[in-house]
Structure formats: structure tokens, C-alpha cells
Amino acid sequence: MRDWKLMAKALGLDISEQEIDRLKPALDSLEAAFRPLTAEIPGEVEPALIFRCLLEEKE
Amino acid sequence: MTILEAASALRKKELSSLDLTVESLNRIARQNPKLNAFLTVLDEQARLRANQTDKERSDGIDRGPLHGIPIAVKDVFYMRGIRTTGGSKLFADFVPDFDAAVVERLQAAGAVIVGKTGLHELAFGVTSNNPHFGAVRNPWNLERIPGGSSGGSGSAVGAHLVFMATGNDTGGSVRVPASYCGTVGLKPTFGRISRYGILPLDFSLDHAGILTRTVRDTAVTLNVLAGHDSRDDTCSPEGVEDYSIPPEVSIRDVRIGWPESLNSEEVDVEVAQSITRMVRVAERLGARLVPISLPDRDAINAVHRVILHSEVSALMQPHLGQRDKFSSDLLALLQQGCLLSATDYVNAQRLRRLMMREWSEACAQVDCVITPTTPIAAPRIGKSTVLVGGEERDLRLATTNLVRAANLLGLPAISIPCGFNREGLPLGLQITGKPFEEGRILRIAAALEDATDFHRRLPPILS
Image 1 (cartoon, one colour):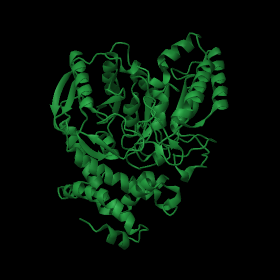
Image 2 (spheres, chains in turn green, red):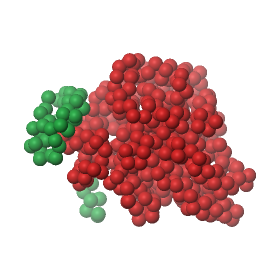
Image 3 (spheres, chains in turn blue, green):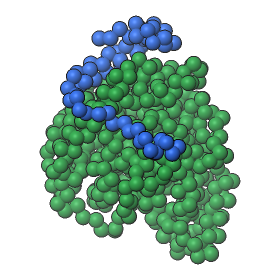
Image 4 (cartoon, helix red, strand yellow):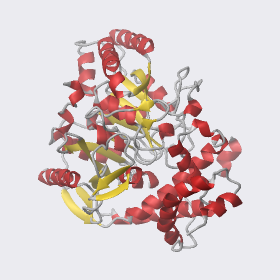
């Protein structure tokens, strides 16, 4: 499991250690469900995000 | 009375819009102190508008079924000159200077907006137990939550205060209150209804939606709201059909997908029984039940949560220093998002694409998928955990377990009443369709509604 306290510190987040303790169960369960999925993504799959160059230029 | 019945009475001049609007305002005055469904009531403005629509009608103008009908909008939809709080202290004094696209369309259709409904703080949660504006209550039992985040809309429609209320749905926020309050709730395909002028929660999961008392009322409202809007980059140019449902609708040979993964541990026994009864009704009407194997629900929900937390936290980052403006529960959710990495977010968006392919393959041989909307009936106000299948679970995660997939994959999904538990609380059935097939799921829902009477029962608050 990730060390959320270290991560918060490294990211310079204004989250206290007590608050991290409260978040930990939710973050750990999400991490446990999500992390294994990332190992199975084929390289050619792009994220479901779109940047439309022409549209952006017009704006 | 439904929208269609009221519209018929207005056309025959048996009623005026002012009659309907005054009745709606009177009901709000009587019931809102108990329900707290409305944050803002537009008494004078609604009466003026009702008089205008009556004048239009006497001049021979007919704007369609919503013309002169009293409705409400969730307090995330901008209305020019009217406070729009998002249920948050952050926006407690925010007064937009333009109308949301949904509000524009409703007004152009002649609807009379009588007020703005309450919600979960920032539309990020399922209880609508709002720390800044008070708990919204369920008309079927005042000690129960109405669901969320569109709890005020569910409560207002369920208590017959208005004929229709808008909602927005990022992880079940229209369908959950529909299920808990015994109403119909539609979350259309991503991009079907413009999000222009809706206070955003999440960039890629937010959808505008509709709550009514019957499926046909949802269909005529969708006729008004669906369509392209160039001001919303995510709004689809896909063609719009006429969603109106004829008086007789057949679901003969409709193929209903039944997820094999749905097991008794995930759903309360009474909910499972009511869904099974509805499936039998569908079979009697000629539909065919097809067992299917959907992508893993836990995986879908994990990907949804990574995207949701990341996007909401990015959106709210400028405000995170104002801790006193957030409840501790909401702050905790936003903090979770800050601790997720950019790599995780990008991978979640890649997994989303893979899951859409898997879902599409799994559903290739069916027309829709039926599940419960919520695995339980409305919990008591103040609870943070619930018992599902004899196991104690987090209320938010349990409540949204079956609804998040439609947000992640952008699929249309509708919740309709499908029974009541022993305590008299309503239960909801969810029909999920294929992209832009709102018409099909509305017809299936209408056939089931026609064959049952759950939508005709009145909550105790009306007796």
C-alpha cells in the first residue's frame, strides 16, 4: 500500500496526519481495487480525453 | 395528476396555469417546512409566468405539453438573477447573470419554474443531508433520506409539489433519489442534454437529468431538453428522435439482459424479490430474458471513483484553502482526490475506454440491462453505513454500487418504481440502454409502468 502521509508531504498538501488517518481506509480500498487493473491495459489504448485542435484555435 | 393529464386539462380550458401554479405553491408552503425540498421558492415570478402562459394560450399559442406546467430546477442550474448555491457555502451568495441551457429550453416550452430544489453539498453525495441548508427529507418517511444528490428534486416530485424537477447525475444523483422517493428518474446518454450553465462537479461524468412521476412525463420533458448546444463542448450533435410514448406500447421480443453477477450479497432480499417480480411482468408482456456477463462492477466503480475524485478535486482546488466552507465529509472526499496521481487519472480514462468495449460486447445480444437502482430502500437520516445482504457497508458506496457504470460509460439509464418494502418505502428498478437509445428504454419502462400501479400510490405525507 502507498504511504499516503509521505505522498501528502511530497505534494505539499495541506492535509494533517490525523486527516490522512481518516482517509486511509477509503484510499487503501480504492488502491486495492484500482492498481491491479492498470497492469492489464494494452499499450495502444488511449485515454478517453479529447483535445480538438481546430475547435480550440477558434476559441 | 401527471404532466400529460394537466396539459390536456389546460388545452380543454378546464384548468388554468395559474390554478396549477397556485396549487403547487400552496403545497410547497404546506409541505416544505417538513421536507426542506426547496431552497428557493419563486412565488411572485411563478404567478406572473403562469398568467403569461394563460394569456398565450388564450391567444392561441400552444408551446406543447409543458406549457403552463409548474416545475422545479435543482439548485445547480443557473437562472439569471436567482441565487444558485449548489448546496454549498462556497456559492451561498452566487447569482448568475444568465440561464442554463436547460432553463432556457424549459422556459421556451412554457414551463413555470416555481423554485429551486435542495441537494447534497456541491452535488457530491447521496444523502442530501446538507450541513449548510439542512437535511432534505423523504416524503414516504420523514426520518429517511431522499437520496442524492438531487434529493430536493426527488422529494418535491415524490410529494407531488411539482410535476417535474431537473437533476444532475455524476454517480447516480438522479436515479438514486428517484429510487428512494418512488419517482421516475432519467439520466440520458452523455451529451444528450446540454450542461451549459450547470454548476459543474465533474468534467467527464456530469449529466443533466429529469425526475417525474411517470415515464411518459419524462419522455415529453426529454423532447424539450434533448439536442445539440454549441456552448457545451460535450453536447452531442447526434440526431434527436420524438421520445413521446403512445398509449399502447409493446415490448414483445425485447431482449432484456440480466447480469449473472448480480447476487444476493449485493442486494437486499426485498429489493431482489421486487426486481424478480418485475422481470416476470416483462416476460408476461413478451420480453425475453437473456443472462449476460457484464464487466466486473467493482472494477467499474474503482475507475469511476478515480476519475470522479481527481476531476472534482482539480475543479475545487482553488477553494480548498477555505476549509470552513466545506463539511468535514466533503473535505475528506476532495482530499482523497488530491492524493491520486496524474498517472492514475490517465490510466482510469484508458480503462474507461476498455470497459466501454467490454460492456458493448457483453450487451451485443440484448436491448437493455435490468438491475435494481439501489440495493436497499431509503436509509435513516444520519446513517453512514447500511446493512446489505447482512453485511455492514459504507452508505455512499453501497447506494451507488449499481448506478455508477452508466456515468462512467455515458449510457442512458432510467429508474422506475418497482415495489415497496415492508416499511412502505419505495424501491427502484434501473433499465440501462445503449448510447442514444433513450427512446427504447423509455418504451420498455412505460410498458412496465402500464402493467403495474406503483407509480399511482401516494406517500403518507399526502394522506
